[in-house]
Length: 242
Image (cartoon, rainbow, N blue to C red; front, side):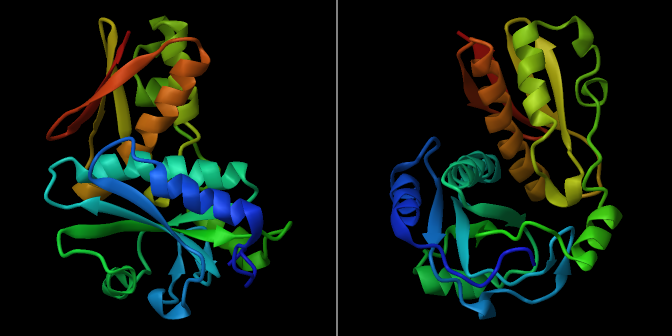
């Protein structure tokens, strides 16, 4: 694992904790800072590009399973917390499997309707990856990103603000880097959906929630404001410019 065994601390840790306590872009989803993450919450298996999970601190991403779009809400909220952590100088990495969710629920005192959708390791990174980390990164195709045409067919003719959003989606994280998101332009709106059967629906919707935030940041950087409408089925959400 590329995060040494030093829990987060100091003003930056306090700032991240405060941010997560108040950051609620969607009801029914939240991020919780676990300043000291006991090793027993991780299974210890080798996972994706990350190697053996061993993290001194963690971000826990929780959603209300009673909501049909809880996974997308949680993905959006979680990525916002992860980006804030990065801005504060911490290193993060998403962990979907390899987590003992019941132990985390008990530790945080969560309700039965609350689900731990994912966790991010949190700490201070090494400058260099180990040989094992480089090997697992290669196996997981960590450097491979789908083209704009692959995730949004016909996008070469779309407005520049949409392309700006799509470019940030291209660097968004997803389960084993599968990038399940697809986009369609519909007038002043962009519809986000997924396809394929290689990952569970919940995982796809979580990943698409991450993509929602990245798209929004890209669109806003191009000077276009808008809002998200959450959808059902394979359709995850629709961004409409205002």
